[in-house]
Image (cartoon, rainbow over all chains, first blue to last red; front, side, top):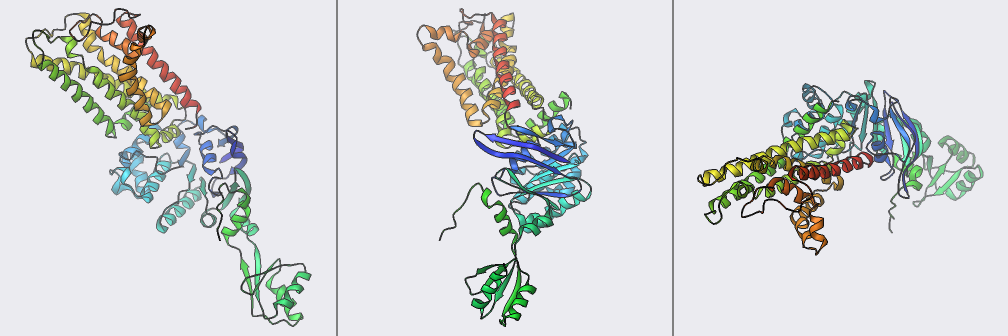
Length: 303
Length: 253
């Protein structure tokens, strides 16, 4: 279990992480979601004792990271797949890590097998593709067979096969009862990977709970209506208290009403309908809506 | 996690990359090569002696300092220092282990260089007086390992403090090769400051009592005797390490 209690990190006047409190439960994959610059990595680094919190604390099974004896046996982390000396072989990299926490040398072979790198174990890690580097990073995280795992943007830049592999791998780790925290800026990815979500923006908690709940809550349900008599139907719907938007291509988007309700109103008023289709807002739109005010770097979408 | 394990870890880390091997080979080839060239060119007017054969060990020391600094700065460059701190969150102990491994290796290289330079001189000029028959001569040769070891400690400390290879190497080279000598040029106070500089003290430790045509046999106005100079030099190097460890412990990795 991972707990953050009032975790805060300031760099001068910039607040990178602002009073974060959350609990990550074992046995599930928890997505740590937020736009770039939201403070995900900083939070993970504070959980792992690499960065010193300005205030608050992070606990792993009730202890701070520094209090853990042979921490790799409790916590495995992949923060950056490039944290490997390029001239060191994959095997040598894992060997020193294993040695440092008193793990047997055979464990190196086991984790290399688990991630499918046995064939390239003696090759220098600098020549690895991004996908292979990620696998090596995951092998390092798994060395101590830890109950708690943290992955920072593990699927960034991977091909679909690699993404699928990592997704299934994280789910199998959680199924074994481990605590798995994985950060991402892609809601669509988290929607299929994580059971729980902690969503942050500009260092603050925006939402935490189950992924399905979050998506239910966040995505807007609307109905697209096409009709030759829109000018008649529109005011009728507004009278009923629904929100109606005129789309550019001569259709109406109605928010707050079901397609049944709209169909009934149209029928009762003799309005011919050409289309009546429920719309589901995209995950990305939902995410943008929730974090819209909390994006660190805005890009103007120019005209 | 015991310190012995951490020493083994740092040994694996150091020897599983190529740059330490290159640095060690370079240090030996340059220094012993220079000693051979010097020995071959000595004659009755400029006779080969023990201190003459040891006159160029500082070249090797500079290369070894680069190796020691690299042992730290490459860890920062490639992020492996963070993996190290994840494996040993105490930070001070893994860094101490690294310092120990690098210092011991540097001592060994220092001895190889010193005795190699002395040996090649004997081979080239078998008739020269190269016998090690005084404590001062032994100190001049065998003491090189000690000087190298503390030079490595200083270089590791600088590496931890500045974290970048270029900056660390520049600081070490500019100081050892330039500042140490240039400060003496400042009128009046220059020589007074120079007595307290670490390179001057480590040189005094090696050369005191060993006169030759390349050296007066140690500075007469040094504040300490040869072993006092070594202690002073070692204390300054260790002092830098202590500061570096405190900084590394406190700052974000």
